[in-house]
Image (tube, rainbow, N blue to C red; front, side, top):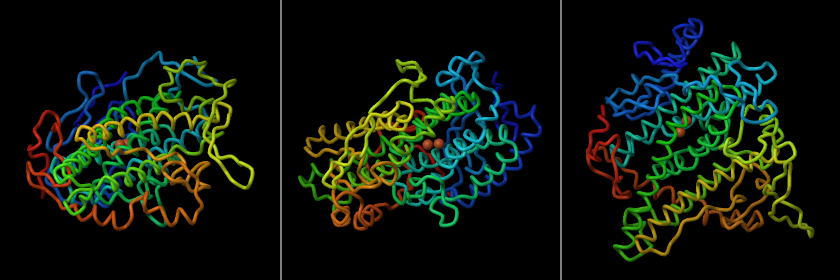
Length: 477
Ligand SMILES: [Fe+2]
Ligand SMILES: [Fe+2]
């Protein structure tokens, strides 16, 4: 059973930290290192306090508390979703057996790897976003940025708890490494490519929270199915917070598109760069970039590692329990996207049949892509409602890839394979150029005045926690 968290504890938690002195001491000795990391790699804009949501419980009757808090005093806690004492493993060779409360020795190193990879993304995004406060379009947006940042910090805590509690000395060493690697570092970069990219402007931030945080949602969704119950419960609770991050991305892009559409209609022109907003083709290029680097996070189209993780019960599928099959997949096949030799020295994009277990990355990626279409549809509805014929779209899976089958080729957003020299010549049509980036950055002048908003973005429909848009969400230092 989970206990109610005690906020007099240094580390608020519902994992009974008080009863485990050794673990408590280990985490308390990691805490100052975390705070040092936050000070040196976290948000750079000085603030007095921010109107933040803090996780205080996991129950249905409300888990969050809202108040103005100085960010370094934020209570990063450890919260696992409620335990189901009868939970059974839902898939793989151990299907139907009781979920594990301890890690079976044979799966220790694989689970460690999965937790470290997930954990590495959490502080990485804080690092990527650290300078955005200086150019926030409103106090509302500034507050949302910091909310996302503190919660990614809490997600790091969530993973570090698992490392400390279940992986002994190796886990403690990995917990230190999570603070030593840094986004974009030459010597010690973050593990995954998308988390070493810059987030230099707010359009990138909204695209990141839409596309890359959404990848996080799908990864957490597979770990939520894990036979290792503490990991499952940790991820279930993280998913609750993640929903807000994606809301920030979804509505952020909504508001950029809405404002651009307004200015296009008012001036009856597509050529709006000089009118202080972001032209639709530039929005499309940012979308192309963030979507394609996020697809890389799903790994190769086929993977025997992931097949083994599934069979072992470490990592399931998205919505595992809703799938209408035997949840073992040993006899099943599926079609995955692939590149094949078309004879005559040419390659072509097609699908090939593989064992269902080895195609699980593709399965997850397809769930993600279907979800991403929802965003594009909603942005296109904004354009349609404004009376514009322009539409945004997701590029083809072969476009701008560094990982998987399509890393070997160059393709247009429509999925047409083109020679590398043509790609070199034309990539500026599809990905943000320096000119595009400089234009977007030129619009990023801070609006830190209560109730005001930058001219390149529409105000939000709703404030936070029932507060109005012109609420004093942040007090700057
Ligand atoms: Fe996260
Ligand atoms: Fe997130």
